[in-house]
Length: 410
Image (cartoon, rainbow, N blue to C red; front, side):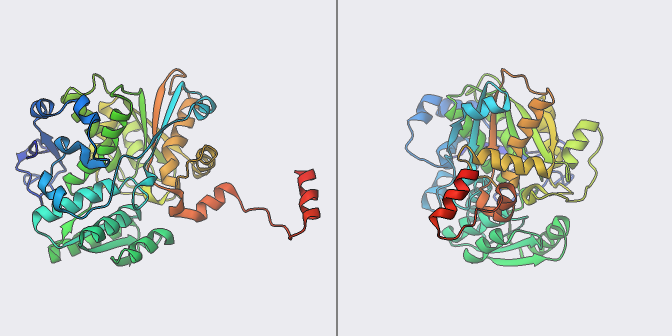
């Protein structure tokens, strides 16, 4: 059994049953939150029992998830989750904080955090009796869906804006997805995918529409809590595009708090690119969200019209969090900085770390803080920008004397 009790609209408060193919509020069309019986979760599971589990994937948190255990047990699936949390004291010192942890979600099967949402989508599609799953994406959600669906035997239709990096599109093709490159931006891509999904009755993997996908994303914060022995950090930094990931992180933390697994909640650091920061701008200025152009190298968070702003902005405000915007140059610097400690992140993946650096410089974070930075995607997703960050290698002829001359001048 699962401990889900239903869904509630974050706009109008309407409560409804959460069916496997539930999307938005049946009353006002708003975004839904999945609710649980936290008392029963606490009766069924303790932190000590959780630590003894052998399952090394996101499914070790079954009591906190809206899926039947039998569904997971019978499905062919990839191993998603249980990514490492690195304590990086030298980087903490370099950034000016007491303690820094880096959660490297780029080690997931398709190399991004969004495998967590797609793994959930596959399970809920099975429970809904669907055979085809579809979504729109700037790249990572697409490749994660294609890979997880391929493992489970589902057909996929995936819509990407034409600017999507070739490495991510190559993943889609290798995984056997039907890929539609849309001549337009993310908003155009989203609209086309929504129209196609409605017309053909496919399972909807769009995270801003499907409330179950946030339940997959929230497992990253469940892991962080367990890896820190349920002692909460002061801050968790998250790169933000559509808003679904930061909302998912907050949802997981709140579920842990309501179930009595943690006794306090951290503040969130919402980090966006200066070239596309509609959510941070709305929160910082205390006004409704307005669309922006998508002018950033961090394609995975280049969302000018976020589809999940309400949950994201609620998460930032409820956590008493802070908003930080970073330039493309600061993002490239963070790629190189993390790389010098052995962590290879794509531009959007390292944006959270870039935000920590800037927050410290601007005095928004105290020097005695403990901070977690979530790296949401691997650098191999975007090698062109990795080269921009690191530069080209030295080119020499196969001549030791030439090498020696170079060494003397180095």
